[in-house]
Every structure is written in C-alpha cells, then in structure tokens.
Amino acid sequence: MDVELKAFLRRAEALLTRVEPLLPIPHEPIDWGGTIAARWQRDARGGWLAPLRVNLDLSLDDLIGIDRQRDLLAANTRQFVSGMPANHVLLWGARGTGKSSLIRALLAEYAAAGLRLIEIERDHLADLPRLVEALAGERRAFVVFCDDLSFEAGEGDYRVLKSVLDGSLERAPENVLLYATSNRRHLVPERQSDNEHWQMVDGELHPNEAVEDKIALSDRFGLWLSFYPFSQEHYLSVVRHWIGSLADRAGLDWVWSEALERDAIRWATGRGNRNGRCAYQYARQWVGQRLLERRD
Image 1 (cartoon, rainbow, N blue to C red):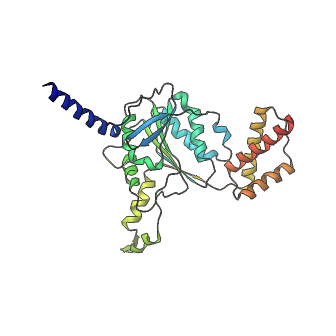
Image 2 (cartoon, rainbow, N blue to C red):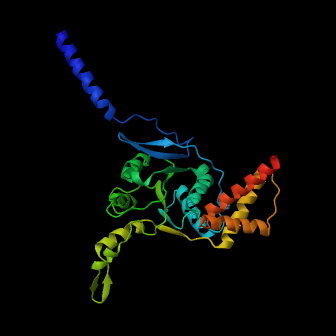
Image 3 (cartoon, rainbow, N blue to C red):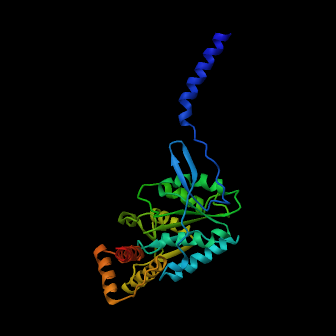
C-alpha cells in the first residue's frame, strides 16, 4: 500500500509541476479607498489590476484654450460621480492638444468625490468584459481610460468594445464609463474599397454594411469632443501659462518679451508642430535654463 501511495504522490507532484506555470498568479485585491488609479495588466496567465501612483498636480485651469471641451467633459464626469446618467466619451483630434491631460486633470478634480481611473491598453480590450464585471459590485465611479484608441482593418477587438458600450444584453454597469482618446473620429479606418458597393434605393444613397459597422463603433460614445490644431496665438498663450506656472513654483522672476515669443515660435517651428505638448516642453526647457544660469 505504501508503494502505491508513494507512486500516486509522485505522479500528482509531476502533474502539479506541469500545470502550476499555467495557473493565474493570485493578486491582492485593490483597496479603492486608498488607491485612485490602476492599470489593467496582462500576461500569458491572465489579467489583473495593478495600482498606480499618480501625480495630481495638473488641474483643469491648466488647460488653456479648450474651455468648451473641458466644461462638457467636466459636466459629464460630475453627473457620473453624483450617480446620475452620463455618457461614454470619445476625445478625438490633433495630437498634443490636451486630450489625455484633460483626463488626468479630471481625476485630480473628482478623486475626492469618488472618481477612480483605470487605464487599459488598446491591445488588452479583449479583457474589457472581465474588467467591467470585476468593477460591477464596487460603490465608486470608475472611468476606464483607453489612450490612442484605433483599430486596423481586419481586427475584431472593436466588436468587443461595441458590445460593452451598448447593444448587448450584458453591457457596462452604471458605475463604469469608458473615456477614450484617438486621432481618428471614426476609430476603424475607412478604405476606398468600402465605398464601392453603395446602393441607390428609391433615389437615396445607402452605404454598405462594412461602412455602417465601422461608423457604429464611434456612435456608441454619447459625447464626442473635438480637438483642433493650435493657432499661433493659442500656442503662445499656453507657453505663457506654463512658463508662469513653472517659474512661480521655482521662485523665478520672468517677463514676457518679444524675444521670448520669437524663441517659442522657433522652438515650435523646429519641431514641426504647434500644440500644447510642444508649449509645455518649451516652457520646461526655458525655465530649466534660467534656473541653471541663476545657480551658476
């Protein structure tokens, strides 16, 4: 009997050795009372939420020249954290114009009111139903944030996103919204070939099913916010704001001048873009140089 038991234990141990690497690694549940942001992580064994340490130094007042977008998104978020109906949001438009920064500023504004932010990468959207299910029983308001969301032709993950946003029996619970940023208004590329099979019915032009399916994803977002390239005046106003903010924190005296304005314009010209990110980077470079000169 002892011989049979030992043989059984050896086989069980060998089986466990082979199976154990395939099992999900247990992770501690997140304490949302002390954690305001997390990221959905993925490996071969499965997915889990990892807490993030976030800096809440960016405020809504730091976002210059996008007042309408800021006010609409803030109102939607205020409704959400107050337990009132609110919409999923698509922020689309030119790069570097404040889309992602607006999400960060909202977290700083409403974290005390119960808002929590979860980042999910576009490549992990197949896990979105699992993530949403895990958040359904929580009492706080969760914004699931996907930055730079877009899909290439032939990818099917966008259908998972469509069903979670709306249009399926099991959609996102009332305490979960999706905020996504993209450079495209329609998240799935539209090809010239999509337009080859449009039909004329009773004098009306009807798109084919491929076009309808692609446009339907963007339609799932109840609120669309558009962000446009900066004018030179807008760019310079953002430069002035950030130089003032950074200089004040460092105790640096400064004066806006024509020479400083020309230098900021040259900076943007050299980089080939004129947007909020470029303005912030120039302000950091300029203030850093002045502080170094003062130290030396």
